[in-house]
Image (cartoon, rainbow, N blue to C red; front, side, top):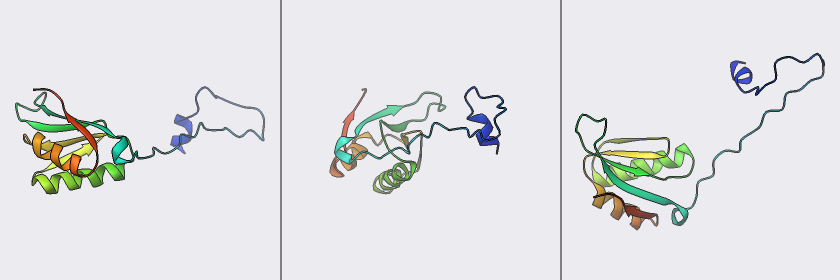
Length: 114
């Protein structure tokens, strides 16, 4: 019930007893095929207490597909990590290994930064 109230975009009150609020239904995100993805692999240390992480950005698709790709990368690199908001974090500097795995899977990926 609270979700309906948050999505009302300007409708406060209606005197019409048959009024049906039409929500602007967003379609669920479709996952692009691996060849259509533009992934960027970079090393990041900001706001992580000086620890290095491999950051993979640019994934377009559902959270389930992002989690599947993350699990595959974590297994192949033998490290921990996480995924959210279209970004994959791998603990440590695994840019070359992650790039090789992504290219082997058919993703368009490139190394960004030093």
